[in-house]
Image 1: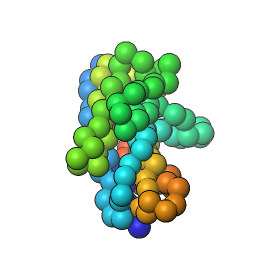
Image 2 (image 1 turned 90 degrees about the vertical axis):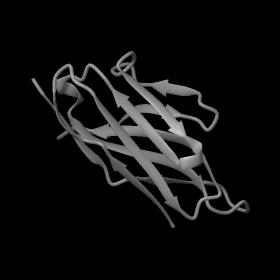
Image 3 (image 1 turned 180 degrees about the vertical axis):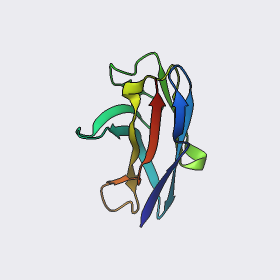
Length: 121
């Protein structure tokens, strides 16, 4: 089994910063893309950012220029640096990862349990 555990959420004022972390553990042979999604109350889960194993990144338009995704492959960890936060960034943030547990089989997508980010105005 594979577990993803997020940390770093909290309450911050508008204009402030937070750094989220997500660590993958368990039966891991390799990890492909890792990403962050978020879900605000009453809304659907939406894409935030993604990073491949080689470091290619992609961002939602709403966070470009404010958020930075990075990873440490040796630690099976992905980060999300969030700067210039806005009240509309308030949501539960989830990480996900494409994890291969056995070279014979295709990777599976795993999700973390989420971490709350609240931005006050």
